[in-house]
Length: 261
Image: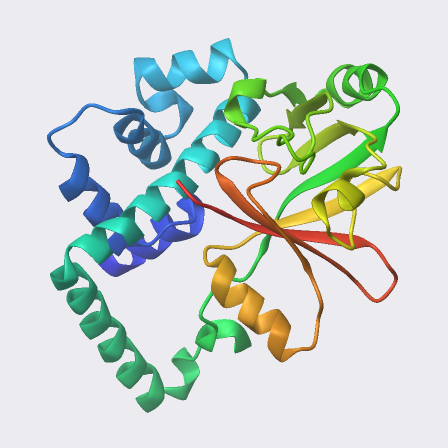
């Protein structure tokens, strides 16, 4: 019964029970937004006064999007904790070895084909739409499609560098609580200024489709193994994301990023 409950929590929250336990240990002595996030993940919007306030004051979809971003940050902190405390990594590795042994002995327990990958399978995160002027786009997705507008503060931007790399054009964000729309002003000079071959906000109306993974270096090695060339923008656009861009077989620009902090 306990194992079934844990699996249900993992499927719903997008995290593993091991990570949840590590968060509890690492943050037990501090009241942070992380503790609020963890409580909401467990009990939903109606489980506490704080949860009800978040869901009713900003909209459940917006609260959900905030929690997803915070959860990605917590997972990155867990990886940092494992680096600083090798015993945590050793414990994790030991448990993973036991799981592999169990799976090897029981073929019906084997997971999907990506189980051996060094990175989490990229999940759809946002679609970027570019325009000469984003106000109309924002009004459409917010007012017609009834998505929640996301505060710009949720996305710390790097801005254009002194050398001209990156971009600081106006941009807006909306969410349905699961995926996001990033609405950007068209910037035709990004690739030229940044010394890259792909401009993710230059050709529209769809600028790019973005996915999130947990290990950008492992995913880059994966692309190299498949002979897929990519433009590595690093943190030129977003301070807390490492972003790369490449083309699908039809020329659609694909972004894959990982949260850095």
